[in-house]
Length: 113
Image (cartoon, rainbow, N blue to C red):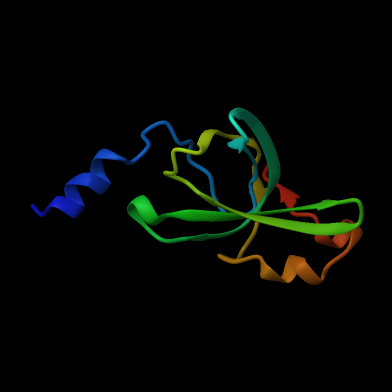
């Protein structure tokens, strides 16, 4: 086995929950400001999931103050403190980029019951 594969397998996080597209997820990220570190939470709907192994990342989207905010979160990054599923959504697509053009209730994902 080569060195890159071994290092990437060693750095995979084992405590990630199972979640899918359309789920609402809370990502706690470590933010460095000067010499201080703090945890900043970002809660949003998973609109895309890409990559595999150590390069896997998700795109989270939420609407704040009437503006859509998206954030790409690398799943196996050391800056990701915790990832928690807030609620599960029911969707029929693998990418939810159409939510970028929706407003109000149309931009919501139905709950999985």
